[in-house]
Length: 473
Image 1: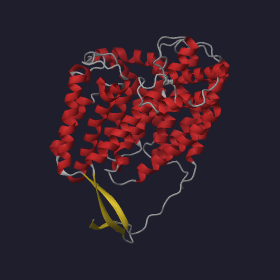
Image 2: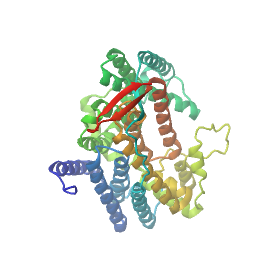
Image 3: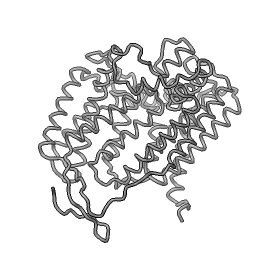
């Protein structure tokens, strides 16, 4: 029966529960528990339970998906984290949120998840394919391999000149050339890194299909390793690119539901641990790692990295005091590519705007989750509309990826890493995370266009459903 839980699914749920218990124990170890608002905790538990049930439901469908990442974010940042922060009476960035504001924040989160799910239920209009039609077959020619590895080498040289050899490996090192212009910085730290990533991914997939150019593919991987070394990047970027590459490495047809466990383990356990390397200027010994791991957990969930729930509460407080801004922040996020020199009144990030208005803080490098962006722009109506659109879009992307069989199609090449970027985009703010995701997807599409050749064939399917090629055009 379709609704029956199998032994594998039960085992998966048990493993996830064990990971959660370990994470909670590591989080609260050494933390003093204070008084808390019971209704804040109760509503947070409701949101946590809703997200957890949806996570289990998503793992029954696919090994991973945009929808899975949406609920994983909500589970951690809008369920688990606010409970820990309420129990410890921790406040981010000098904010002072009342229990009523926290309670209303949790209600907004529930509406956000519920309407996201409604957006996923909107029916699509599919065009039925004819039995005989012209389709595209994707391939990488010898010339495109040589072009790609040339681009790769040029990008690595630019990275070595501008970033510097040491900065490639250690985020704590200073870059050779400091760039204050946000547009140029986007090119240096995102466009160039995404270039070596997608070239490595495209070459790997074609080599797996044909067995050709293994040496060039290995060289492209080395360029990727140097240009996107994990400890030399921000955690969200390292996780997105290396996690995406790992999914390609395993290959879609071999991926099992255990990948969802790996993703949960990585974000709940490995992501906090990786914070040890944020300001490192050298490799740490094993004994030093053992010493820093417990501290990294204690410092993570009660730190600015996990401020999403409280920044949503700050958005609630901001709208109560100043009202929503009728889409002004959204326009700034959509037109992020326009330099501030040409647009002096260009909006700053929503998180920075809210925190500076509420606390007069000089430090404004804070988050603003997508639901907070929606609320600041259009109030509760914005939350509903944004969630429906987001649910509709992610459902479409999930179906497009899992129904696609061509490993060199753009959706197959871009989806895994973009899905991981999407997790961190949920934290925001939209101005920065949206531009990073756009740079990632744009470079993926551009390199697919440059390096992947499309040849049209007439194809037909026999009575058994097998695909046969008639002739090349």
